Image 1 (cartoon, rainbow, N blue to C red):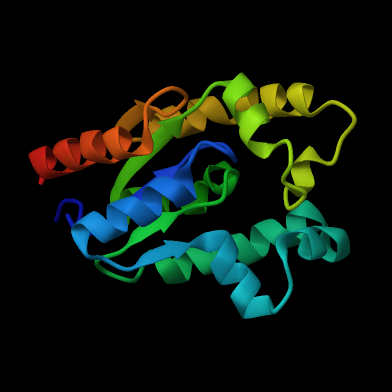
Image 2: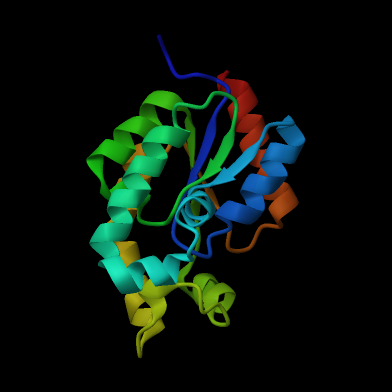
Length: 174
């Protein structure tokens, strides 16, 4: 059996637009929208920075893996994943097996601009956010590209246009 047409999974770095685009896609397709980070926060009752503080990135990644195993079993959803979700082979497999994966590619400049006032990003609590984003990009880009069924650049395009492009591609392949 091939991929289920119902699910769309969004991958990409923080600030690439996964939540914004995801909500709009879900509305267009009349599907429920899930955000794996939000789901983890709801399940634990604390925010992501708190989980990082008490359990470190490793503890967070375990929670993320469990949550993705759960969410990828639901049919007919749009899911925004955490930026680092694709680091786990198990996560990559769960996403690939259960949905249409869209990589929202975004420039480092644009990500910096979008995240600079956001203090809910534990990985950016650093003296040099640009250097950190460049390092994350270098570490993750290969995974994003290898997982994606479709890649779209979100730095300059309006979100409505991004959504339309994704819908065209998604409808064309299913």
